Image 1: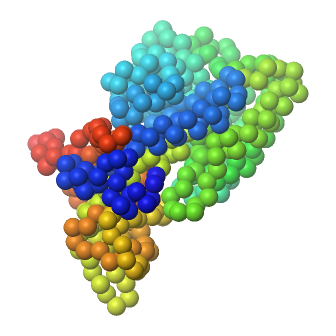
Image 2: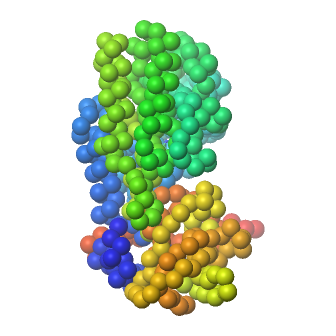
Image 3: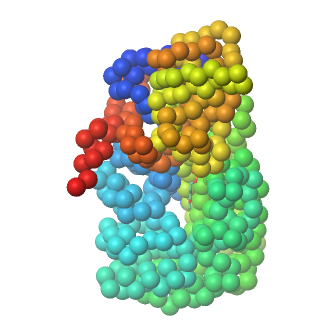
Length: 420
Ligand SMILES: *Cc1c(COP(=O)(O)O)cnc(C)c1O
């Protein structure tokens, strides 16, 4: 995202003031150009350099039909975690074989839906789920392609709530259950075992935990012996690449992130005289995060002795990540300049924790001014909620001076339409 352009009130040839007037605020705005660049980074850094590779977008990061279509048109599959995401994909006419189904508690109706729709891959999260899936597949006369999500038993350098690969995590099959699950899958007519899956965490700045996870997986496969090794057709490395939320925050490129893991996987299978299996990944945040911003209008500014509170017309209802992870953001004042001072940017929700930025440096601003928060493209719209009966803001995508509505904003009527 071009900070200078935004400060001057522009995004990809569009005027922020005009957009605010037309669509209202808060407003989620995506840059088509930036989305394309993010996809291209995976093309150049992962798909092009290595054969037998696939990318599926972790759709929980930003789930809507238009984005699913954009990804599908560029050869990116979809990682879904609920019946709702499967339904959205179907409505968007995404080929169901490009979907993979993750999650630690897939419900019966969701598994049935996935089997009926012919979803490409089930990522099985526990031994119990394996038996459950087989039972449903048998009833329906279907065969399910499966990966086992394994606990890689590694710690990560990310926030505890974004770390998923340690042994205490609710996600994945533990080491001791792997062989049992594998043997079951080999005997079952309904289970087509394809390989394994690990996901160590999110907002990662380096690949060390992926490498540590791989090491654990390699030893587990070796313990399984020749038969297990030969049965591995695919390894899914999950997602997790971090992005830059504030200026200067370090992030790692796709190319650099996957280089060493790919080399080590290649060497491992070479050592065992096997062809390297397919390698798939499921990035979410890094495909969409920096392509989105939120546009707010400034409201009450409260100057107190110790600090200044600047309230905007959104908050934890459109950005839950500060309350959830203590996430850090950067704000830009639109069409304002001058000496900067430190303010606390807060939302309008009735929670003390409803803070967007603890310490933001901004020029003098007043009620009615526009403010942009950067890098809100991932886990914002998808986590948006109606707390305090705030309507969920619209989502638009801009490209070369044109704006397209991806999701309309909620109306007041819609806020109560399901109430009796
Ligand atoms: C959340 C998640 C992802 C995507 O993570 P990002 O950090 O957004 O790339 C991928 N795979 C699984 C299993 C996940 O839970």
